[in-house]
Length: 166
Image (cartoon, rainbow, N blue to C red; front, top):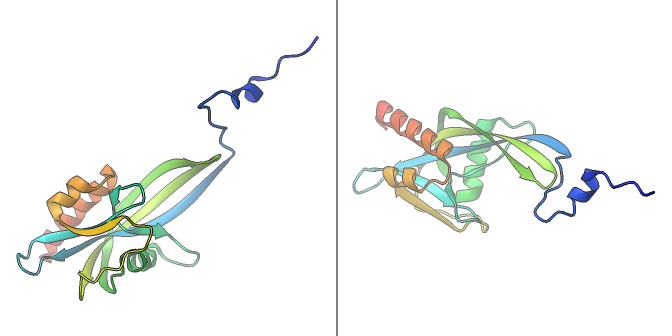
């Protein structure tokens, strides 16, 4: 008499079923809410990037070994946008989320800083993988951002800008 296969062996053949999580990893990224004042109107503008999946977000990237998140934010902004001059202000907060990468569960922590673009803020040279990069009026940027948690930190940044008279 044959023994039936355990459920775990059958499950991998069920359409739409994903294999179980084999590993959990923690990753840290950092980025920035980048702002400027429009040269003509002096209205606040926020720089957003459009990723490969057409989602508007902020520039960010992985923290390298022996690098502080604030340094990462500046480096990643330069790499992703081409901005050469900026002032990185205080930490606005962090966003934590998780996602699946194959059989790995990734627990992500993203540190976000307030960043003022300086110099020629129209001289943008985005990385090839980005679909677009654009300055938006602050209110429009809030509507465009694909992630609510980042949108909330943009609002925190806007309040800090207003309070500091920047």
